[in-house]
Length: 197
Image (cartoon, rainbow, N blue to C red; front, side):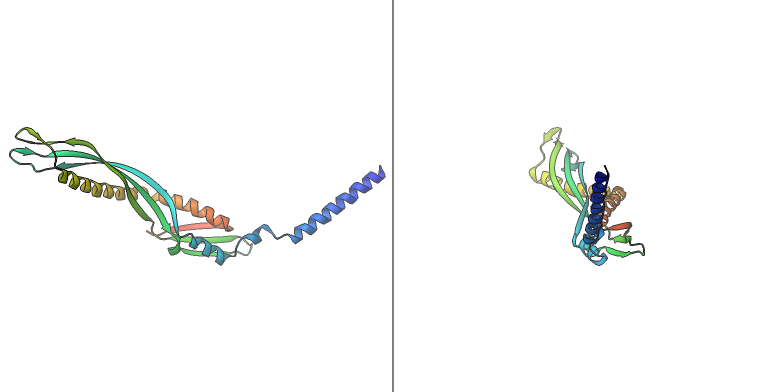
């Protein structure tokens, strides 16, 4: 029994000494994190950070043809489908960062105004009401339909841009979440954000 206790004590002692020796030889987990200046450079090298994508469908109505004594205008209802992509250019971001006395890293990220890209996915006629001439239906000419499509596209894009002001807080929250995770991966603990108005 005494031998068993002696052997177990010896094994336990060797294990503790080996653990301490290996621990001192291995680098600490924080040594794999780049220094503050390199971390800032890595964040800027991301370039355009896409933070939100919205898909918008707008129904646009427009009148076609001319109204007169003997004629009435036709009406077109057009469905416009747009994708809007919101991004921040991190190359233009102002980043102040450092390390405190206790070793924790902090950064303050001042982001420029977000940029957006509106791309038209599809435009299709939903309803086509013909105008009349002396009470008889008058088909909308193709050139009028083309003009109406272009006018509808312009109107829907302006509506999509107006949609941006409603989404401002969602865009900023998405940027905070995404960029906060990136900054934490570089070892930053205290992360604050400012947005250009």
